[in-house]
Image 1: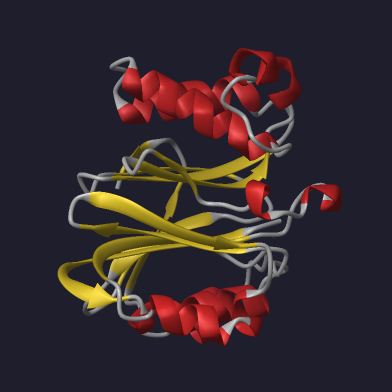
Image 2 (image 1 turned 180 degrees about the vertical axis):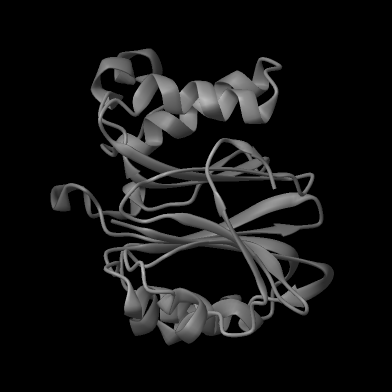
Length: 225
């Protein structure tokens, strides 16, 4: 399964300052089948995605390094179905520069809802159905935390779902529903954010990847972070 990392700060920072944490997340996790990063820039969400490995693509990270932001969302992919390895299925998904969406887990009921979004779907992943369902509800005026919980309730079935949505106004909505890879909010001296636990319930994420963190709590129900 995938790993996710959201980092934000009151003071702008360059992506180069957090790439090492994302690389460690890929290295210690079970990802490596695609990666992407979405970041806020002048009120718009920008995004870069690759079907390769983050740690194998230093030229790409060098090109992105100087982008300045207050918030960014990394997604390191390990798909439920290996046949879906491709750029079109790589996350985060982005809705017109306004919402970046990352999912870790499996939406068991995605096939039931796929026909509703057929004109909008480009790939085969279950995550993309969750993305379109969430964005459609938000566009229709549903409060984001409610939209996320409704989407998860509709799609999860017997599956698992950690979800993070970064909005262009800086709002972050998150929900932790993955029993095998919990989602945590964290805070350090400069940054705060969200991170999955590397499928390892032994605190490795905060000992080896984010050792500067001094405050942690688990995220469960959908809410603004």
